[in-house]
Image (cartoon, rainbow over all chains, first blue to last red; front, side):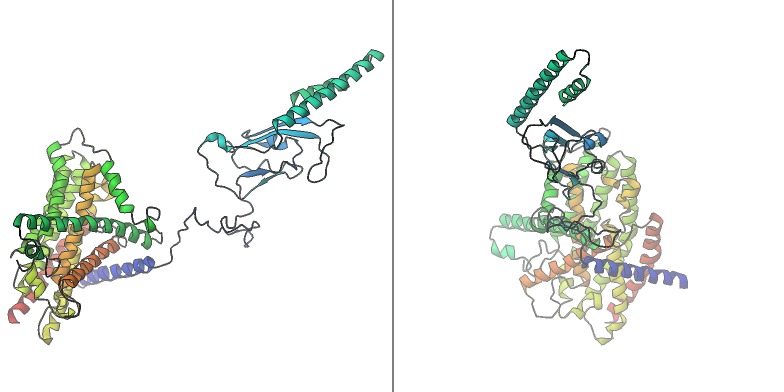
Length: 214
Length: 349
């Protein structure tokens, strides 16, 4: 009998305790962040400090090891294709043209000599798996991660980002220049060959092959 | 006709009757939208979320969007279902819920039908929902629906008894089954409410514990009658999918949904009438009158709707045996003891 009343009392008492808890939560500060309007400030758990990327008001802070959309600084790219080779999903497409020696070429942003024109540099973010493997091989640090991660589009083709700044005319011009240069070189080689018929122009051939490939 | 301002306002009887029917219907429609929004918002606030925020400012259009969504959904009738009963069930349930509004006194100047057996009528019509539930559960031809309907029947039969005894106790205190007379007998300050023993001399403090216990009993049993958590075993999602409305979709599901919210208001109104003085102001003559009366009534009833939602997001669902234990071994004996004490008090008063 005593147990019966005790259980009834406990039933009422515990319900009241629970109601008190829910009532306190009812008026507590809400944890929801209205995401597209306000971003969540992400704390860097490893260093204990805020992330290295001090974002603007919209983006908030993003941890240093976050992997988002990739950006390529075309003025730094030397066209080595290390990134395209490292990419496990083949989302990076690079095409280059050799720079003709006589051409007046602006150097790369870091001051080094430009050896190749990057005629085409495309990253297909529909394919990209954000593995960050393309970042490390880059000798000039041209390819980097940005804090940008929301860039959905309505068309799949809009996800192909073209980083090359060369226009069609420029590419055509450079191609003609290269062709002319190679023709001249071949001519010179032929003349040389005619002079010394016994020595084959091995270097010349391989160079031409490479130029054709590009 | 002194309790109905529309008869005084409109001379034609037929127009007046139509207006009297429409007024609670409009109220129920608006109330249901508010209650759905309240449910969403309170649920999310308890869980420290924000809830719907995108549809309109602070998401206040969300219930409208939900109703529109439900209406435009496909109305499926299972091939093996008993089509007549299946289609009838939600309407019966809604009619039962809406019929209760016929006697609810919204204020001193408005009660749709001021009948002498108001309390009895309200209680009888309140049990109408079970017919709809059992009908729907049986006609669905689905084991989960049938299980849910059977559970609901067992639950409502168990909990009608303590609720009925509580009503009886209040009726013996008020000496009437007319809802307006019950409310009028609680007029004055809030200590005249039946929650605090009703009007009487100072030694009514001996009866206050009994009325308080009776109030808790009635609150619990009405909660069980509306199939709300923690007594929602007829539609326990984790056990029997959705119980009696597993097979319902579209507008018919909306009717069930709607009836549940209407029932919530009906039982809240009943608690308000019986224990909290209905449309009486808590402060005597201060802020009383026809319009203030409606305000107090709706405020009190909405508070109990809030309590129901609050409890829903606090307590987990009871097991069937726990439900039966509580109904038969706790509420029924306690309600009888309280009834005898209160009836004795009503006799000697």
